[in-house]
Image 1 (cartoon, rainbow, N blue to C red):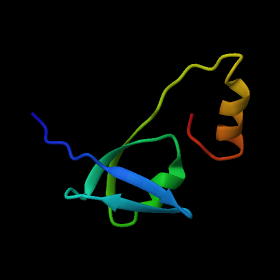
Image 2: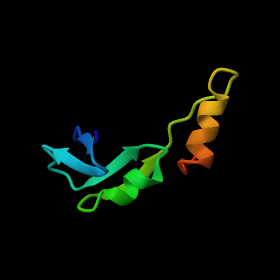
Image 3: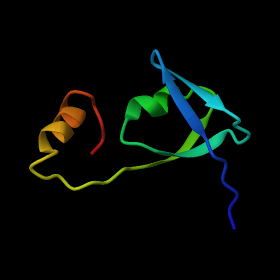
Image 4: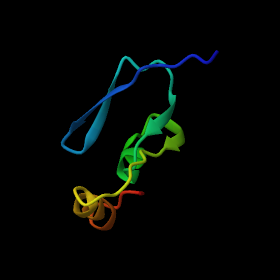
Length: 73
């Protein structure tokens, strides 16, 4: 059985602050590459993508995330 540490991250003016982090290596659930590069004192050992299907209600939103914000979709 693996031991996982719960990590709470707050976004404050573009910086990430970690709370109660004992493990300095994490798997990060994100599509945002800027989050990975923002974590200076933590090693991201794996990026776990958030996968969702595109539909008529979210296709514009997902397009902006990918094309304008650089998210990996």
